[in-house]
Image 1 (cartoon, helix red, strand yellow):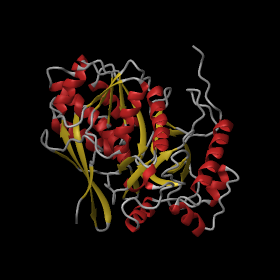
Image 2 (image 1 turned 120 degrees about the vertical axis):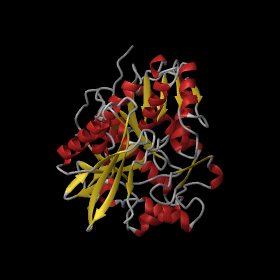
Image 3 (image 1 turned 30 degrees about the vertical axis):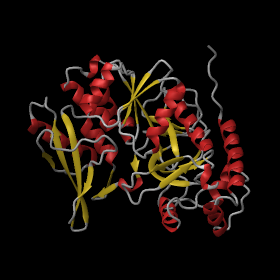
Length: 429
């Protein structure tokens, strides 16, 4: 079998520029949202280079899109074609504000399917695999794309909607599933349920667990915890958003590193405060082929650390690498007594402790200063909860040079999550 050849930076960037020019030519004047936005910004529609796009074109924000949909309900004006061209409807969760409704044409849908198929390919999924989808199918984009892409690849696709965790574990084992798609948190939950079931995870044929929706898949301690719960399985991370589609896949040579699918996206990393290029900052994406409902320079709110673009990765690819995957959300960082605390850093510490079943972080204020408090639920196998509490407090203090109170709670008292975990809460003062 011939060794695959990956495009170098010059080829990647030439393809991006060609797609950008075609995209903008298609949008103007058909897409009212971007026609007005670019005209108001005084931007000419010709794109001389990728650098020219970054220098002249304005950012697009979620707030703008929400306002547009409120002003022109129900779908807004970021539509390049008449409504009868659109066949797919999806919606964001709305956990950080009003949800966004998103429509796609068959052509845009096929473009995103190809990106999801690439994720499966890099993860080693083939037509012989049986893929279990451990979630209820709601309006989130990723559910439907992943399922349809796996079917297109030739996999046996097993939906797990409307089932309890116990029933899902039984189906995974009984049906001989070899791949599971879910969030990192739910992979842990299924593994815990399997440990208590008559058919444990070790009896399954699962070899790959593809996770998304949270940073956990690229956090070493969380990956290790999942792989211990599912013996013989490898965690494979990726990420995407309803607004943009499937964006990254885990580097096959470097776990914990995500590659941007640069044949589909033009990616930038900026300082969220000033908008200038940065090494660690907010991920900004332009969708190159989602012509029916495009995004130009969309501020995703995802915090990332990018590697050197021109360097060849150990996997032979030249696509942009994000070290540590998605580090968190830009607005999730909490400054506690001058120390920047990210949720992913707290998770790395707590998941590194063997007997932690679940946790919850409370963010409060005292005299206008942020403070953290952690609730810690020991696992059923924990023999010394007080010792675990002390270890957690010491680990957090060592990492952040802060005293973070840790409170023990009874087993089973903290919530479990099928979708995105919400472990950080703000205490009302």
